[in-house]
Amino acid sequence: MIRSTLFLLFVTLFVSPVLAQTPQAPQTYTYLIYHKLAPGMTIQDALPVEREWRAINQAAVDEGKLIGWHMMVKQMSSNPNPTEYDYVTCIVSPEMGIKGASPAAMAKIYGDSVQTRMASLQKRDRQTAPVVKIEVWENLSPLFGAGFRPDKQLNVVVDFLKLRDAQTDWRPSVTALTRTGTDLTGQKQLAGWGLSALVVPNAAEKGYNFAQVRAATSLGILARVADAKQLENSRQLNRTFEVVRQEVFRFEEFTLRPSVSK
Image (cartoon, rainbow, N blue to C red; front, top):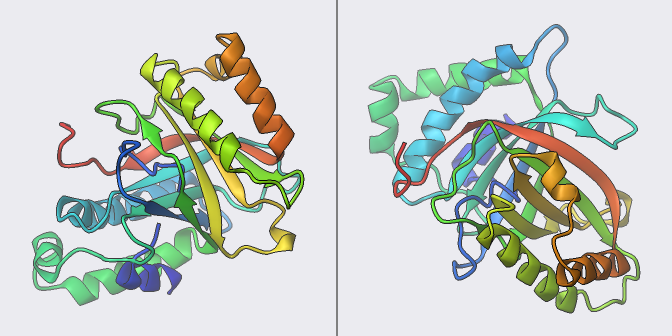
């Protein structure tokens, strides 16, 4: 039910991807959708369902309704409750709202059985990996290299952050971090970097209200500090923000922008 509502209204992270946006691009939003596998189910059981959602969302991307969709499988987490969820799907939208594929595009996928096939998809979705949590994020500084595309070889590290002092003006830190992100993506040390702010639900019990996303082929790259400027920016991040949770994902399924060749 949640998935059908999101599909009709239009849902979306980040960081994701999020995906394939340049610093000059308009504001975007990410719907981060958390899934927990039903008892006895595995990621392999969820893939057919998510691949069907990928096809639907690819149609919306092709029509310019969405920026992207991707599925990320959790690899590691500092969360003391590791069973909270198993994977996330992200939909990135050019506005804080959801616009799905047109009826004509849906007919190309399902023919004259759109309603029947969608009902079946939603049922299988709930039975395989129901949605347990949804968050909407405003993407503040998404940076991705030219021709960026999600890839199964990429590690995606997400730092969920909170301000050390709620009264702090965090914007200067974002500016400094964006400069560092620009340098690292320009030097191809990172495939992508981004900072997002939690929009909803946003309350004290969440424990975090920002997220830094870094995509790289090796986790070792994330541990290196290339120069003094980057070291100072890292220190500024630590002075301004506290890492509440860190999670590592891998891309599993994803849409592509029409301008990116397959």
